[in-house]
Length: 137
Image (cartoon, rainbow, N blue to C red; front, side, top):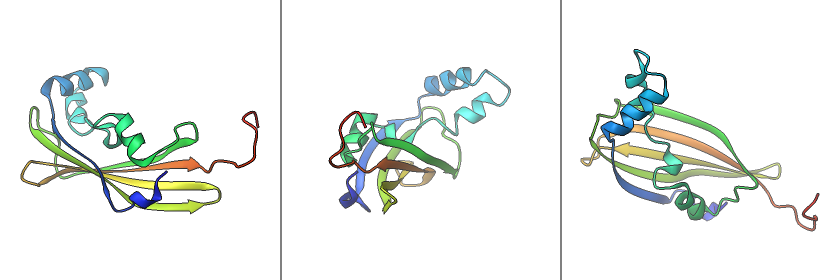
């Protein structure tokens, strides 16, 4: 994981909270009375909002040694069907601890005018590569 990317913007994207995607997510949630409200809260996953490969390459994350350590979301309000959304992801923290690298990433979703809609904080943990070990160990 590239620790030198700490406090840098990694990715930016202009998106749309497509109504059809909200409907598809609500359907996947089971079309319960609250499914559409829930879908409007969790439409995007910050690290993959512009494609997971772009995120992985931006921080040089080794997926064979990485795991998701946590994911938090906070909202100013739910996404509105078909509203334009700006997304920006930043590495807000990086630590080396007990043979692991821990990176915390913040994805901010805003209106084109910059009003906050949602903030996500995602933690990835990557085991440090072992030197001198054979591939079968």
